[in-house]
Amino acid sequence: MNSRPQAWFKQAKDDLGVAKLTRDNGYNCQACYFASQAAEKALKGLILELGAEPAYTHVLGELIKQLKQLGCNVEELDSLSLSSLSRLAAASRYPIESTPAAELFEPADANQAISTAAAVLELVEALDTP
Image (cartoon, helix red, strand yellow):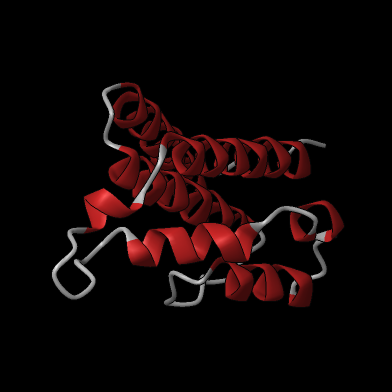
């Protein structure tokens, strides 16, 4: 990777680390948010590596579409529950009515989000290696 995509991927790894730290300390909502951020930044780093500017979006499916348009084989990425990860991230940001977002997430949500994000990072690394 050249330096700009590499910076995005490094940030993705850091965000995944923060997701794990927050989950391990009982902050499931924040773990979901940072897991989604990790996946998003890894995908944007790959788009940059392919010579394009990533779409200005937090929707992981849109980034997958962009990768596909760039000729990237996204079959394995498509098999992950990225739309679920995007939904978790959106729901983790703000209260819904009078319920804080933090009360809407269980440990299973955080574990699934982290697992999905880790798979994205692993696949992106594999796609980037010759």
